[in-house]
Image (cartoon, rainbow, N blue to C red; front, side, top):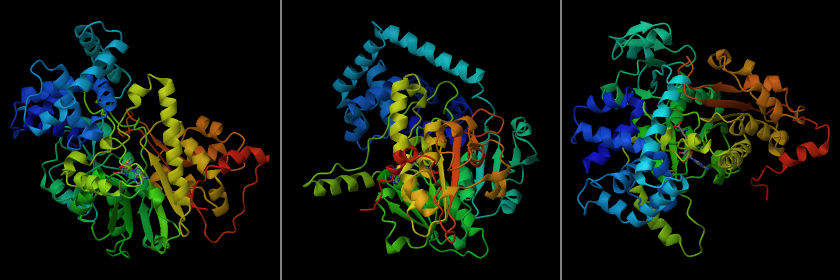
Length: 551
Ligand SMILES: C[S@@+](CC[C@H](N)C(=O)[O-])C[C@H]1O[C@@H](n2cnc3c(N)ncnc32)[C@H](O)[C@@H]1O
């Protein structure tokens, strides 16, 4: 049913296209469904999304219905539960069947939400939801999250060069010298001062239909998301580079671009990209192909990074690792101008351990693998496990605390696993989260781990970072670094640590989303002098963090 697919496409491409929801829909000339119907569906679903997200997750339908993406499930659940005429598709249509099978359960979960919110009737609930959406929009304007956010475009050095791009598809753009100037120059082009090959254009310009986009010559990627690969600064000397959590592949293809633009390099497979989620791995593979980086990047689909054996012969020359694990997504910019879309989380794809389930498991995986995933609709962090949930979770401190504890435990595990690769000397760790627990705290816990101290891993200080990152002014949170380092000052001076960490904040005149990145380095030739804790018990807790392979 084109209505749902088209509405889902509009939502999935929000970041890449920019502009208001109305402009995105009514400006689209090739829609099969009525633009008015799509607008109403998208706007209403977005308003109800925080409730529908909970309903869908509780009913667990994404686990049962593999044909449904989180966005499709939201749109269909909206119509099934809230639209007067129900789902706008024939009863026998696979989308209608996929959602209607769960009608009783979805309605029951929805009623529970209504009762939990103390709304006696559906009308009362509706009035509340409309008011909340209006508040959200007003608040976004007031607190500046609606500040000018340009469309960041990375010129893909595997396929072309910035100079060529300027003389061809950006030839009729006017170069501007600041983002402020760009905000009033619809056909302006801003060359970024920190990241090579990155430009910004006005968000009203839609390049998603441009031949250069379809040829993989340009990639839509937020400036902040370009920091990790640039900070890692891989060179041929680093041997193999691992991107541990790679889909949809923005940073992986950026690594390939950096390597391929080095003259001494040549095209050879030296970036290994792991992605645990099989569906997202398909998107990664498509993005690698589109970026022309198939010879540089080898994809390990359905591969849990923490299950790679660092001692394996395959990884003897891994010199650098980029870690961009799942996070709360709290730095991601809301995708609509009226309200924030809350997407239901995808169920975990890790098969449950069971002695006789291997056949079933195989069938399940291949069925999942057959679902076609359009690159343009999936090349976004929003569809990852860490779909932005912070806004609703922040209303519930306990829930947020538990989620952050779980996430940071998982993030730390990823970092400690990376520290174990024998030849590794550089690691970057990043999140699109604004929470200290996922950022500075993880960095300090990693530095105080046994493996870091045994192998001599240290923070990559600002003075040793690549030029653009050294120059970037927004650094780590000094207060948070002090708190995280309390009793562990022997590891690093809190001011130095905060200055080594890099932050981006959404809604500022820097035009980025909220983001965090830090680098770790190790000198393989230096004698490892283990920092000495003043009192033994102060570092003991973190010793336990290393849950790696030292059986
Ligand atoms: C934040 S997203 C990565 C975005 C990506 N780096 C980019 O820039 O396009 C995190 C990804 O890590 C994957 N992931 C989570 N845990 C993993 C693990 N243990 N091993 C491999 N991939 C994992 C998730 O499925 C998700 O696709």
